[in-house]
Image 1 (cartoon, rainbow, N blue to C red):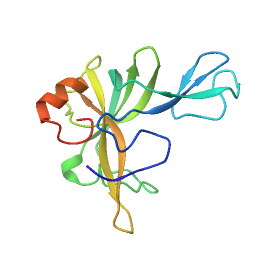
Image 2: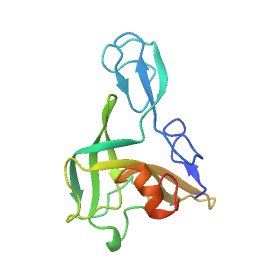
Image 3: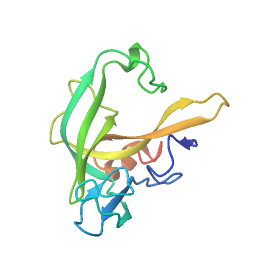
Length: 156
């Protein structure tokens, strides 16, 4: 999959094994995502880039049975075939918990505590015809996904 990231500095791209780009505070050791200029915990400015793990555990989730309202500009969750869509809190061990779009799940298959892995998915096509991609989490480990899909899709 080609495409341009939805925003610079969120995840490594292009990459066979994409990673989210977070920050680690040099004062209190807190990890944050996305990376910030100052630490959200203690306010220090000694924040360095840290690549986050690619796998985590689903901590909690919610679903939405209608398309997002404006100013939403994606197409990844638009249309009856994408409803409901899922968002979850994924815990990356030893680093943090983060909110992310969940793909490859249904109301019948999603479970708190299930293993999740980072993927890159199409978000939309912009006015100049460029594909814009974003990150999401899908069920299973990254290793399982590569074997299941024979490497189809980034990080899938």
